[in-house]
Length: 350
Image 1 (cartoon, rainbow, N blue to C red):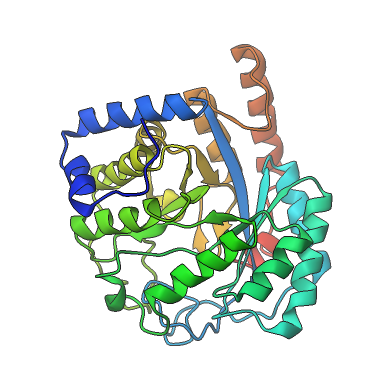
Image 2: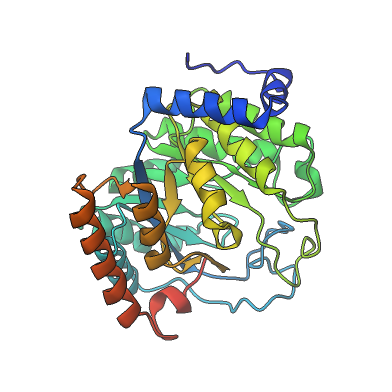
């Protein structure tokens, strides 16, 4: 499978239209060509500034335009962020992602953000941030501090984008990705499925991502989490097979990228997640919350990984009996020490 940056919507739509089993089989073949088949990269996501966002993204409970149950929080102190990163590392994460509900970061916030990046890097974790739009100068500063990845999703196709967001343009998003790439950082960019978009819109989203000058190193595919108070709270559910299809198509047209199962996993059963891994997903967010939405707990993920023979990238392969014993021991330990309502992962949700 060659790496291309000239896909057409018609070509990608043809992949979506393939018989389901043929599509997944093709995606798994591509996956095995470029990736270890039983390895899943694990990331943890923490909200470092929650709520009161001036953007009007119709899916987002953090938007100041809608009345939701999300509490507003100021930018977290650096020490609290580093404490959360250390907990994430102990839980098996290899990348720590920090998200702020901003249209764009202010210059007064940059010194704190840089200290967070440097502190997390010193722990031996990969770093990722999502802060909204950033200038080329801000991108250079973050890169100099050691930021590995910058997340900025395209969300949907250019044609459907105006139905979801009006406070920034599609070109604004593409410009931010360009600043990130020019600064030497890796790009984390994907979209959200289940916002009322058509199959052609899903194909259009993937075409935009695959036709960037370089494919995003990480492609998060989110399944909409419907939140009361947002304009999309009553939209129809996504058919599980349709979601698995977009994972498979993303794997085929962006063969070297990490395709990440992101928001919405709480509503996926084990069988659906297993098919997503078969279709080429090889990265997950790990922990009890993603920003403001629930996510399966670490113990559930480890149990599923054990059933499927999947290990995070930082773990070496071990005999099944030894691995199972260790995993069950970790599960018991984490259940016994499950976070309380005062834990930072609960207080500061993205």
